[in-house]
Length: 152
Image 1: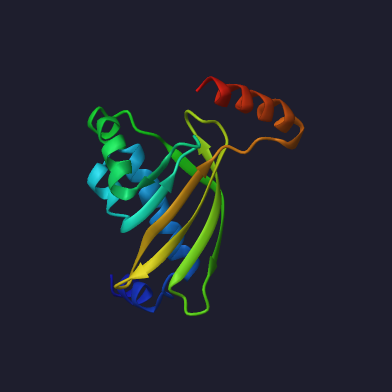
Image 2 (image 1 turned 60 degrees about the vertical axis):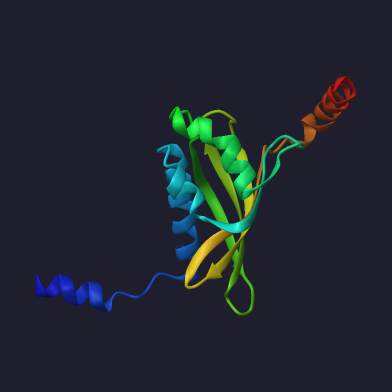
């Protein structure tokens, strides 16, 4: 027991990249578990969430209002990062990232965003969810999006 305690005491603290990744992993896990309060506690009060639809630009509170029925019915989303890149400002208090996601409903997706260190905790200030379109399919999707936009 003493050896385990000593090993834990001597273990190096997690790297800043590991800290940010852990926050994002917990955030994604909270959505998958329909833990609304925990999920939204990961945002700054003035956070912005951009969804995959061009109309989806929400403040944290607007996004929470939209998402509440999904959390209440336990019909939320499940995202898992399969790769992630994290960078930091020179002072170490701002992190930005991009991640490739495995999702249940969207197929391959990508998230990117900005986290701020507030009172020693990383909080998401901006998140942008997108669905990458392979370049050979771009022309077809551009036309379909234009047609769709004309009907709206």
